[in-house]
Length: 115
Length: 112
Image (cartoon, each protein chain N blue to C red):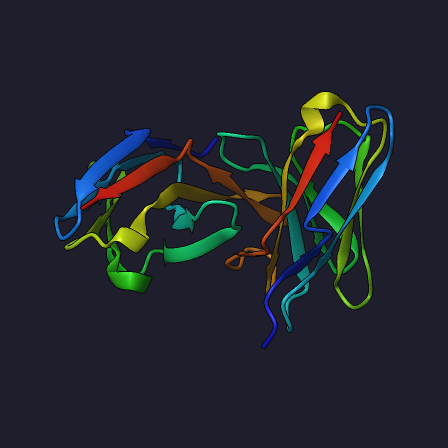
């Protein structure tokens, strides 16, 4: 079974400093991996996706993630945090379910950005 | 282009009642998936519909059922509501099976 593990439940950074949210995956074959963000009382917004093309994936709002097969990791980074980045971030793997696919979510990382 | 919409935004029900949640998929999308997100947790997959047929289901009991209509909109029905059904219910649509899923804003259900 495919799964993802988010290594930090909470991350706190100062505005203007780099962001690193860590995610490890477990998969028996090349996975499709995503990062979604959820702002308070909102739905989920797709940040970026990896589907076995380039290992460095660029997303929206300056975020990017690097797929490292040797480390089974898919960490999310941003060079400079902004107050508006404060939200919950989910690392997600897509799993085939016969005819279709389902998304399996990590437990989430709450990002806090301080002045 | 209209994104995924869900109705209602909030709902309060009592234990034992039945509820129907609605989802309109994004234009051009023929696949709809439903997820349950309990407070403080990540979303859990309920089921997926493709061209009006269920084609994948998570670990949810049969009292969770769904429908997809010819225009690809969808309903989630929950019978015999339990307190633990209180959650945010998210709908996601995609242009096809295995494609990227785009989420609606969700329906927050409270069961008293």
